[in-house]
Image 1 (cartoon, rainbow, N blue to C red):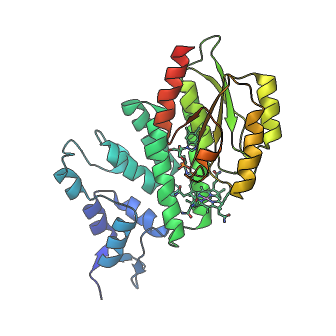
Image 2 (tube, rainbow, N blue to C red):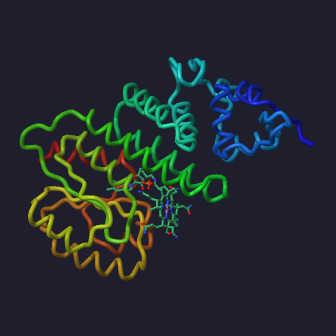
Image 3 (cartoon, protein in one colour):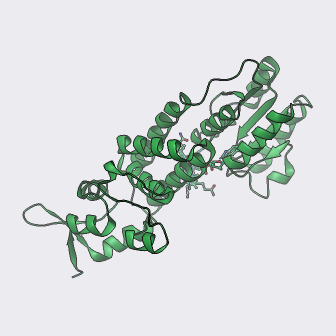
Length: 293
Ligand code: B12
């Protein structure tokens, strides 16, 4: 039998509160046994598996890596924590469904590092990738993935209210995801990044038929259209329909595309003005186009 650790010992090793360890046990993140008296016990090998599968950096490693300004108390009472630490804690809190902790961490990040682009690329996308990995290896339930999306959407809606008001006459941008694509988070983040750059950006939502996107462009007359493309069914059908749609767009419309489904096989075969791999690139582009108007 492996060495058996108490939740208190694990908390000390990971430099988090014991209640976090208990929550991770109960949400299935850490496998554990129960003693006859009902106490949780964690095998050393299970702790190792948790650390590896979630990219958990131990305090020891982090301080050796130079992050000596970290001051750990209970996660709820942090003072100066590093960016990596916020990322790690956000991942844990999101998987455990701890919305209050997620909100505190998002607020910390936003106050200290500003910029929604990095928050989206590193914090949200990073945490959702972990959720996806845990689900893939059977360590998270579907409901935990869905709950993580719901929490992120609420946190982003809250962030939207913190983006400064738009200047009168701000340039118009609209966008969304195409029919069959049900991903909402990246799309909503794009809207926030554009608003932060001064655009009057409105997400039209997910799963939009191309016809209705065309109608929106004609009616709203935006200067920028974004498409977040995270899922493509049949590639050939998508390319044909998309290019037909693209050929009907006004020539001076800036069409910005991004998303994981725009693979090297698809991207060179479709029309657009700009492609961005991530939100930081979009932010740079949005500021540049805004200035050049
Ligand atoms: C949540 C999730 C879902 C949810 C989404 C719910 C929702 N409301 O959004 C649901 C349940 C719908 C779902 C369904 C499916 N999913 Co899914 N899903 C995920 C998961 C866990 C997170 C995705 C996410 O929201 N990430 C957060 C966003 C912010 O990050 P992002 O998508 O990486 O976007 C970044 C960039 O791409 C870029 N970006 C994106 N769009 C744009 C647009 C512009 C303009 C710009 C500039 C940048 C940009 O910026 C973002 C931030 O950096 C991923 C796992 C993972 N590794 O990410 C799997 C994952 C994407 N899903 C996957 C699969 C296979 C599916 C399904 C096909 C499963 C199925 N058989 O039904 C379906 C397809 C659904 C559909 N038709 O749309 C695979 C895709 C594999 C692949 N090779 O493509 C993944 C990677 C999981 C896996 N490892 O198997 N999924």
